[in-house]
Figure 1: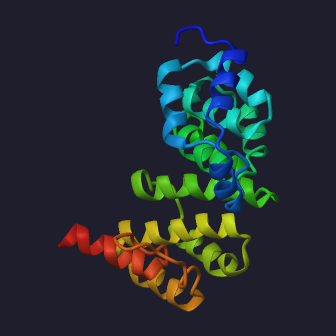
Figure 2 (figure 1 turned 180 degrees about the horizontal axis):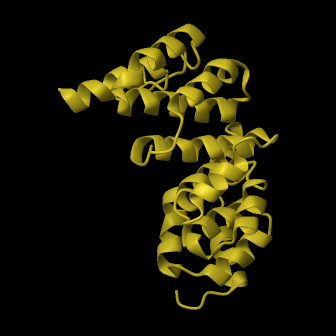
Length: 222
């Protein structure tokens, strides 16, 4: 679909609307009625189109934003554009895709991590913790991992859900990738009991940090 216009893209999105899918998605806080596999099919036809992505994002509609995140070029956004975007990602799927498909892939990831880390908006701070998890796993030099554990120990229990989830991810990542800190990470997880009762489908790994750490370490070392 070369040179797709905004009107054409919005028509494609409208054709994906399914009332039953919308009802299911809205239970999770996502205000759209699209099958995401079909949405990815639309994105595959359009391919990368940064100008169209920016037009779609500007509509402020969740379906358009999700398509924008699939066809955008993360490196094309400025730091201020990324900052504005993260503050406009309230629906869970928009937030998840922005963090994973844009924030983690931009060359400005570290700049944004530092900019967002102490933000008063928990959604913004959560993105910083997600970026921190990537650094803990792939490029930990320069990070004070003990200090990160101090912050998790102090704040994770009472953090809003999205921020809590991201902090918990960092806790598990430290425990998995840094054996010298594994015992402390496990102890923090056991004591705080964050996500201990999270429903986990058969065959999936629990997000409860002690179980998560133990399972991944067993896979790697077994």
